[in-house]
Image (tube, rainbow, N blue to C red; front, top):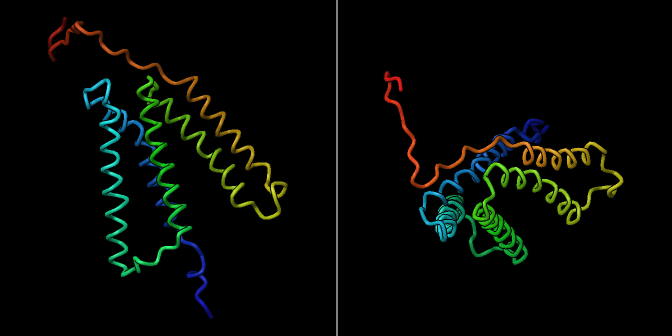
Length: 186
């Protein structure tokens, strides 16, 4: 008799999903910080994106290549359809990262830009996934809480955007702020 536990999915997928939630959750803020720290108001975003590309190379080329070699995978056997769709997925991810930088360059704040991205992306994902991989029984078989979830994602993105906390204004060039020394009253 086969082991029932071996047939049941574990919870590792949830840990990996939460890893993605965290890393993508900090992505926008770190990317914006990198862009600002390039100290180049005209080309800083492109310089930051160059380093995103280097990071993608290190993470998305060298790491999987090492895993494939470690697993002794056949690197000569990759179906064209798998390569095509994987390449399209990578292009979509890179365009999204570039769009994020362009949004920052157009004075979008990380809190607002990323709220829109992360509220809108699940809606687009659900729509495209259902179009490419229709659910069993068609659209009519989908339960109403699914559509409610899409609506709540949209509403949540709007609420975060419209009611975001006010940013601390940047100091004006040439202005000086007095800082009191500890223990000294000014």
